Length: 237
Image 1 (cartoon, rainbow, N blue to C red):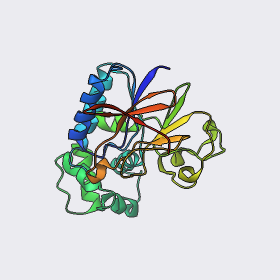
Image 2 (tube, helix red, strand yellow):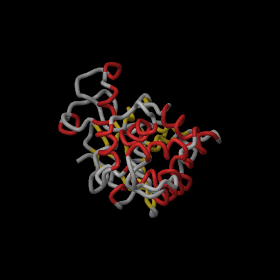
Image 3 (cartoon, rainbow, N blue to C red):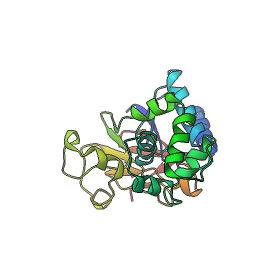
Image 4 (tube, rainbow, N blue to C red):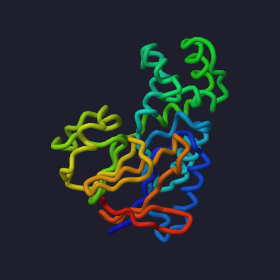
């Protein structure tokens, strides 16, 4: 089986991103495609740098696919004057979702009104970043895997999945042991570390909560985590 790398939710942790990119470059399968599972922004202090690094790698021709996460879509919608209601904007700016950290990474003072913050963001966030956010796909498929930010609704064909659920679903996806035809590789639900459930692999190990960013190399359904000491098999359990 051809190798493919996957990287979990980054959440503005640019130092962690740099770490896993070094691990990928040092792996025997270096040069294979990389899929980033979304949530590049919020909570961490360096969302701008994360976007710049991934977008630059893509522009340089690296075989990188960056999927949309719900936090990336919140940021996109905050930047769109008609894309987000004020109550939604307040939720995104809360400590829980961490949007203020994203704005701060662009040099925006995060006090003041919602309208003022949106006006400041319209000036500070480069058009190239807004365009990058707008074109993030929600699914990446191979013959053996389906990559998606949050998961799939069990029993629903991929082409009929709700686009919003692709970036937000938890129940019933996380509790359902049914096969999806291919291994589903996802993030979105932060855990104490990566999880392999046989039908799915969750690579959101909680980097947004100051735990290690997870990266894995996948051959078919065989998954190995990348560590400074080399590969560590991630077995179903």
